[in-house]
Image 1: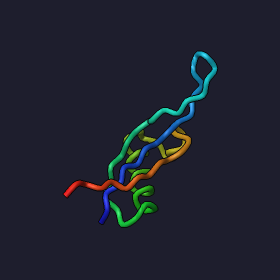
Image 2: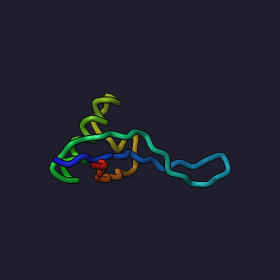
Image 3: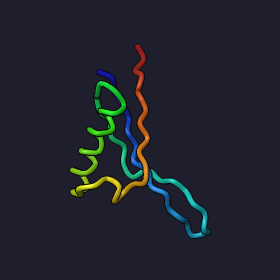
Image 4: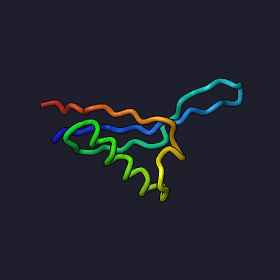
Length: 70
């Protein structure tokens, strides 16, 4: 299994009218691939927020494999 860092990101408009992306939550998961990592992270995100759909609090998901130094 590989290790992945999954970030849930939300686009917001600041006081000056500029758009920026903020991280709503980072979830670390062990999974076979990025697809499974996404599904596992979505479940954890929803459980933490006590919601049924992650997209209520985030606009997109970024999945990155994590390489640990030997």
